[in-house]
Amino acid sequence: MLLAVLEDALFAGLAAAAFAILFNVPRRTLGPCIVTGAVGHALRYALVHAMGLGLVPATLVAAIVIGAFAQLFGRLLRVPWTVFAITGAIPVVPGALAFQTMIGALRVAGATAGTADLDGTLTVALRTGLVLGAIGVGIGLPTLIARRAKETDLAS
Amino acid sequence: MVEPSPQTVRAGPSGGERFSRSGRWARGRRRARALPYPPPVSEPDDILPAPSGGPIGPARVLERAELADAIDLVLWIGQLLLEHGAHASQVEQTIVHVGAALGCDKLDVLVSPNALVVTTTEGEDFRTKIRRITRLHVDLTAVVAVNDAARATLTGELDRVALRERLGAIARARPAYPRWLVVAMVGLGCAAFARLFGGELLACAATFVAAAIGLVVRQELTRRKVNAVLVVVLTAFVAGTTSAGLLRLMPGAHARDAIVASVLLLVPGVSLINAVDDLARGHGVIAMTRGFHGLVISLAIAVGLLLGLALVGSPAL
Image (tube, rainbow over the protein chains, first blue to last red):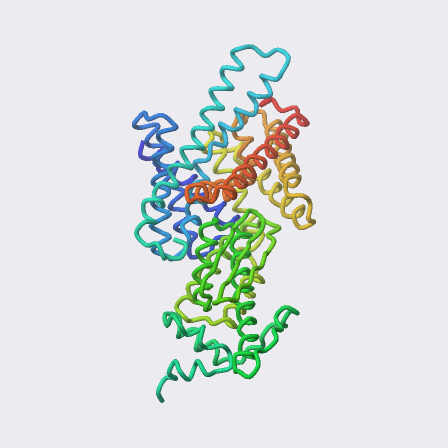
């Protein structure tokens, strides 16, 4: 189990690194970007596979942790927190679910569609939307709490 | 020697009275005056009839020029931030703080999705300027660099001249990573996604190739100023065709969801995350625009990918 979580963290970190470089983050922030992405995705993996949590609540918890890490690194390195939030959130984006929704929508629109197709597609679409919403809410939460402390601080 | 007292400063020709009032930013401002600075060319409405018999006349004109310079600088800061992927409250706060550090009494900012409006007020004088924001090119190094420059202005480390130089350097800066590295890493990152979605080694290899080709296509099309949405459709089409085609050639690799990994490089992450932050902080209009932009880009990805899969006749469809 631990090995599986570590493997997940490795690949999630690689994905986060790719997007960090694609978005041209400063070199000194590359490490923290990778850590944020790896921790967030591995946490969700552990919550889903080891603790049996649903994908949506697990994503919410992971997103809150990503947001908190982004705040922490932002304060430490005096860099806008969104740098870490953006690259950290990319690995938990429900790409596969969105793809299934898309394919399902085409199937529903097809001539031989049945209610089972509609059922499956709606389920996947809802799940995609909820996971995206959980990412948004979770990542935004820590900044709203932390921001109260220093109103005049520049872009943290 | 003794520091010049406020009285001597006030007597200076550059409208020192207004600029030394608050005292908090006095250090930066005093240095700003010490440097020879060519004032910007005054527009027709700058030339006010000088009140008869007083030192206020010429000083007033210069002061308005200074105001014009300050507003130009903060607009440039806002433009750089907004273009390169900062959220609205960051743009607004940075402009307000830097404006104060440059000596503006009062500053009002309107951050809209594709324009910035800033009004500076100095006593009875005011200036309003609009700057159009026409492109979005995510570059977080630029965002961080502008943030650093703003911080240095607040501490008085940078004056108007030095700030202008710094911003120019940021606007001209080369990317932090060489192009081959970006292409290779995006390929690897998307391959990692394919692995996370349950693809085997072969599927990951196909994703690597498809994503790398996709990124090159996107870079080339963007450089040729093709419409941004069309670029996304075409890139998704090329990447989808490549990965689905490669997977068809490899009968062993069964990985339906891995195909989507090759187009994940197009995910509008910056727009969507910024939309969340903007919505939470009351920048509703810009949040809606960003969210909708993210939605349109996502649909464009879907269109391109599905067209690609249909062309190849992928079994995933």
